[in-house]
Length: 482
Image (cartoon, rainbow, N blue to C red; front, side):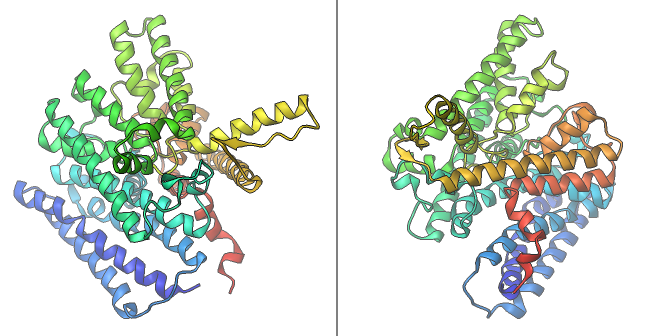
């Protein structure tokens, strides 16, 4: 493993990341608020640290090994999450301690959307913009790593995506070169963001709110510039626009690229993961709307509008809210939370286990039932028209087992800090699935959670965002042996 090359890349990333603090700094200067000093200090510290790491190693050029890739991927969110906390910690008016600042930063970069802040409506515009930018930058980082980097390391969801029918959209790279792949992904991501911001603006949002919420929507992040989240706007048009773009962003971004290149939308329906995701989403929406309607919680129109929005927001792990879904009656809050375990599709900014993995687990379960009836039959597991290799199925089950084990352990640790079961369960689900809002005492925000519990949840957010194994492998002795 080459530590020099890892540190050089990390230094470059920090230097580039410092640039993200300039737009909020400009807003702070123009509005003459009290965040100017905090952003200047954070920018200087981040840029200086990046240059300090990069400059002595700028001439080091070696091929990346697999372990280098794991280390760089983990450091990307961990270190940037720590430096991303500086504007929060150095702005005196926010009165945020180190634990709160790091929690907010990592929540943003991992597109989780859990927050410790209140009073967003009266907060400086520079801080609000910075929070949204953290999510947007984290979102494109997730896609590039998932589609362009992790396949080279032999890990990640795109290995499952390649089990689909062969074709241009099924390759690990959308274009022959990784650089071109990253550019293609970024162009799709940027286009979706511009279209989303434009639609929000036409629906009545201010320019600032439209851009900020477009950042969070396309990144499937969930941060808002208002305490009431999307409910602040009280507009069915905005709710429907947000729902549409959350669904689009939860699909594999490779499908959008292929649809644009082919000038055809047929690829969406031909993709078995997209069909599975749409089916699961439809079930969740119908149950939610119907229960709200028949329980007379809301009238028919409100049941459809709010039920549709919240079902899509929670299932895709965005975390926007039009109402406090934790106060809805019966099983609905817990059901929505359970649907968040699916999250989005492979190659999207969504969190969770991913639709592809759950689809394979479902198909494997059906296959085993058939095998019981016909014990001597050879029943292959297929996705589309292609047989799925046993190694892929084994990897899916391994991921599911480790994901479940990690969930239980983290939940028990949180309960040991004094949290009740519902709060601990939902907090871990919201962090590990990169969802954001939970139930119980974390339904509104995480401000009342202890600093230790926040640090545990930060680990859970990183664990979920890095697909579990990418982070856990760093804790094995064999990783560090020569």
